[in-house]
Structures are given as C-alpha cells and as structure tokens.
Length: 231
Image (cartoon, rainbow, N blue to C red):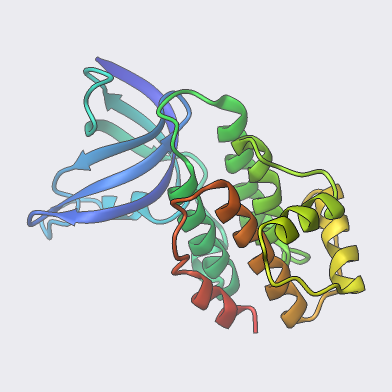
C-alpha cells in the first residue's frame, strides 16, 4: 500500500552500482529503512542523493507491504523545508553530523510517535535558522531527547547523582554545574558562557548518561569531528 508521511533523513549506505539503502525517521512509521534505486546514476536527471543528506526534511510517498518487512521502497520524495545554512556552515554541519549519529543509535521504535517527530523537526529547523547562541545546542538536544526516550532528568543534581552511581570519573565544578542546570531548565537559544573545555566536559557527561540507559550505544564516531569544530 502507498502511504504519505513526513520523514527526517538520517543516513544511507551504497547498494549495488547506483542505489542506496537509507535510514529515515518517519512521522507515520517511526524509524524505517528504504531501498532507493538509481540515485547514484550519472544518467539521473535530478540529484536525488541530496535528499538523503543528514537531517533533510522530507515529504514521502512510500510503499509499506507488511509490518514484517524490514526494507521498504519510496515512490515519491521531495524536501519540504530546504536548508539555508546547515550544509554551508562548518560548525552547524558538525553539530548536524553528531545529532544524526545520536538519532541513528537511539531511535528504535517502528511506530508512530508524533511528539518525538515534531521535537526533532523543530530542533533541526532551529539549528538551520539560528544566527547566534547555538553553541550549546547539541547538549540541550541530548537533554531534551532523553525525555522522549524515557530517561530524562529535570535537575543537574539528578544527572550528577546518576553519573556518580555509575562510576563516572566525576569532579565537582561550580561553573559546569550551573551551566548544566541552565541548559536543563531552558530551551534553545539561551546564551550560557562556557569555555571549550567545560562544554566538552558536559557533553561527555551526557554521552555517558546515555550509555547508562542504552547499553548498545557504543562509540560516537562524530565526537572527534565535533571537538575540532568547537575549537
């Protein structure tokens, strides 16, 4: 059957000579995998591979036969909110790469979750439109995403308590604690002065916090890239 849904492109791998297998987080079906033929062909009239760059916001018409099927097909595709800055800004591209990897490793549900989809969509749009004040975006994104995944915390003390209980090498830092509290209590865009070392430290705490709750999280490969662009 054909279905219409919005989607957020996460990743893809090459398949055969001109096709890809793409992972997309959809509004109607949760995380899904699609085979897309001919997108890497030199004979293709349009650059359809661009639709599958990280976090691209998509309108889709898809074939879904059975719940048992693990790979589906896309009938129609278009981008409903073209990016103005993410692909062209080194810092934003690094943040988007990190965000995409974390989503790829944490999203597991193959079912509709409209609040989660809307949160991710609005986060992507915020990052693309932000002109300043987004240096802590990736940390706040993880803090908010954790609530949708079922293990968010409300206060810095709660976060630090979990880290200590799981033997994270924790060193008290008044400025880090205050910044963490502000990030937990506020939405995107709040300017919180932090040096690079403390910002990386809070990020590493959040990644460890995710590993406490998600055993299969593994190594975050984009973290090294993020450290470089945050210099």
